[in-house]
Image (cartoon, rainbow, N blue to C red):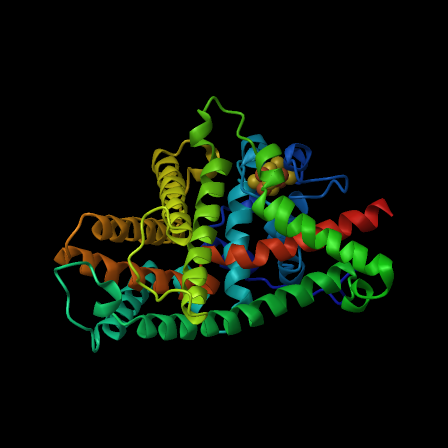
Length: 392
Ligand code: SF4
Ligand code: SF4
């Protein structure tokens, strides 16, 4: 691991972190209890204590270039073991909010994280904007059958979706670029090494496999290391709820893309009535149900404060969960409207609400807690590379 030089101290770092929900970690006495209990501490014996020190002494660049920031799943075992009640788990969560705000070149993430009023206004403006785009030039609402794409032309939805994805892609690319540069410099990883020779390729591919499939999709460490150990029934476990939410969201995304691809290939037009077992429809329905169950469990766990990790919530936590839940519920509502027969007027309203909320969720990805879907896999990639280097 290479050391950053020269070190720049930011005297406002801790205050900034506290504005984003961090506890007062200046009480930390570096006893190391959190490191002893953290399942992610590996053998270097410094995590998460080292990151707490960065916040206390103002080492901003060191904090932002720490891959461990994103490998932490906020199991809160460290918080439970801290004799100073410094709550390092909550500090890590706030540090991730700080990182999202710092990587975002537009400044929007910071405004949203700092002001619940600004978040609410942004949501309302986005909702009004998307609903207007979808409603302008809408077609007739047939009551013989629910003709959703006769009401809102699929071209309107597709082009709006593409525009949103371009914005998300560009903002995410800039944020990810900042993060990758910082972490790679710190870890001494050079892109050239990863594509040079069979060994370089092998390490890169192995790290990508670990990060994307084993850890992100398979949630190995989330399952094994961060199990609460509390007598909670399995269906209320945090990792299961998180997995259902993630797989459900990815399934919905895949169903939408497949639907569009089939239309582009001329196999079937978007909105063609299909039985519920038609593969793409079935994928969308099952994914929507999985996401709804996962998010509902996460909301209930947070509302009931079932574990230390959810005893404190920031507005951004609720914002993301609420948006995900509303997207899932309105999607399911649209499905129900399709199969109840006829063309119920409420079905058109629920459909417009569903598309509006989905676009809203998508465009906010790089600016809120959801950004961890971008940053965490990359951090896990570096984590896996570092482990391979340590073994060598
Ligand atoms: S357990 Fe608490 S006091 Fe000890 S090093 Fe960790 S954060 Fe600091
Ligand atoms: S919350 Fe869990 S994973 Fe994160 S630093 Fe604390 S003990 Fe480690």
